Image 1 (tube, rainbow, N blue to C red):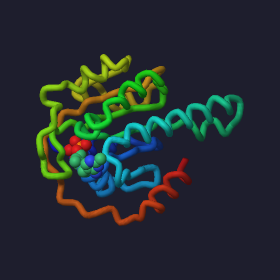
Image 2 (image 1 turned 90 degrees about the horizontal axis):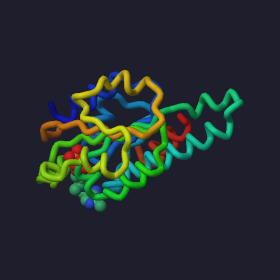
Image 3 (image 1 turned 90 degrees about the vertical axis):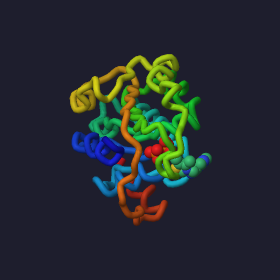
Image 4 (image 1 turned 180 degrees about the vertical axis):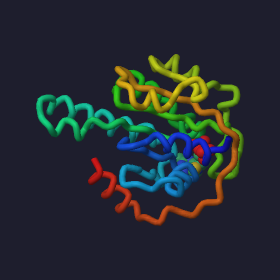
Length: 195
Ligand SMILES: Cc1ncc(C[n+]2csc(CCOP(=O)(O)OP(=O)(O)O)c2C)c(N)n1
């Protein structure tokens, strides 16, 4: 299975969650598969999708807690899903440690692990030898799984007390998709409005 099919598989279970896409083909394929206001296509900063997702997760968590007795709190009761790459995670490994220690319960980091820098021509990454699932576990993630061993829909729809890391091993290869026909401002504004 390549990244395109993996994103299709994930997106079929997504309803009101906020989805952050890694730079390059992951975001372009997500745009092709299911463009929605709740998607944030990260266009420039390789490695930072997980940090951006963490920031949003912590912010929504805080807003939800502040409005506990308020009807508005429901509005903040959304999960944040990051579709990241192995190359991007390796570039910002410290983010795993930060997420694991901050541990927001509304956060799911999915590593689409094709063992390559797919978007720039499939050069090999180190994730073949450096096991990102084990790295996530030893960074402190209490919940870290291979996609194959979980029922994603159940996991998505159940309450967790912890952040979740999912490693999805896939084959290299990019789908022949177009570019994202939105300006960065449009992506940001519609995403913010959807929250
Ligand atoms: C700091 C930085 N370095 C390099 C790049 C160029 N670049 C863009 S996407 C990419 C590969 C990303 O690989 P990965 O995160 O594994 O995702 P994949 O495309 O394989 O799904 C690279 C090297 C960049 N945008 N920013």
